[in-house]
Image (cartoon, rainbow, N blue to C red; front, side):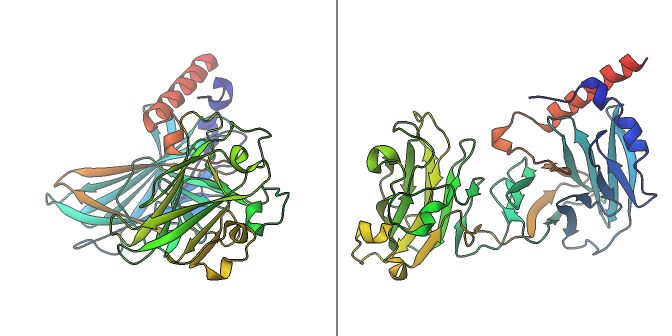
Amino acid sequence: MKIFSRAVFAVVFVALCAGAFGEDSVQIGLPGFQPSRMEASGKLVEDWGSVAFVLSGEGIPAEGAGSVQRVVLDGIIPAAQARIQRGPLVLTLTAFRAPAWPSGFDVLTVRVEETSGHQRKATLAVELPDGAIVGRQSVRIGGRTVLSLLEPPTVKQEKRDWGYDDEAQSLPGWGTPEVECDPAFRNIRAGLGGVPIFYHFAVEKGGSAQVVLGLMESFHATSGQRIQVCKVEGAQPVEVDPIARWGRNRPGVLVFNARDENNDGFLDVSILPAAHSPDQNPILNVLWIFPPNIGLNPEQVIAGRMNQAALRYVDVGGQRDQSIYLSGRLEYELDIPANGFKELNFFVASPGASVPLPERTAWTVASLRKAAREVLSAGAAKER
């Protein structure tokens, strides 16, 4: 885990003190980098848009007075803090810029406190810009990870009838097929950093289908480099090395007789790296869902000549690929004890930066605060 030099980060106090926009907003940032801005409503404004939080529930008024101020955490870390009174609940949002290399990112803590002495149930809605794509523990905009959800929450979202549900990335134009094939083989989703690829498809509860996965390796020159496990609900998993099975830049397909085993009305598809694979980044090019009783010709499927017979054809990583979740809003259901509180923590992409995925980083809120304390303390000592 890399952090900023003490000399650079130590002057953040000056940047913060110069960063107020009056009584309605407060800046946080690092010297030499564009600041973020917190408004009195608690909205945190970045270059990609903003993230805001709204409380609702029985006995909770729709509006409440809010204010924002500069605060100092742990006696030395400059931060912005907004406080909004919503009847018996107080919503407090605190953000500071963490000194994580290369340009830092914002750490946001959202605290909901009960003040009337009665247990409360509340919904905390997270408002996001249009076009935001929600994953399992992240939010992306334009391929950039802008929000990491550190605690896996109970999230209420409307679902589409199909889509991906993962932290993988779309890489259009990655594939270079050397034979005639469906054009979707030129695109992929890749689980960079070893994250799995997940898709879900609506079916009748307990229903069956033929699921066909299209794969092609265009990065490695030899076999034995990318070995992955393909899992489809209701069928046996298949371990495959695309080059060993079909050759480099040669598309191939795997056919699975799938069934909705858990009776939830969705077929689940996942691509994971094999434990012994040197390259731990799984890939997927194309995905078809066919009726269970249709005869399939693999060569015709690869060529794209059976697309019209498919119940669902997915150009994975292409322009029409989509998240299973509708974008723009997340909801957390909170059960707050009398005179108690609930907290949620987020990593938020500051201007020009992205945030790490929770499962792919060793950073925590505590370790980032510790790093900030150490850097600022050393800088202050040097100034003396």
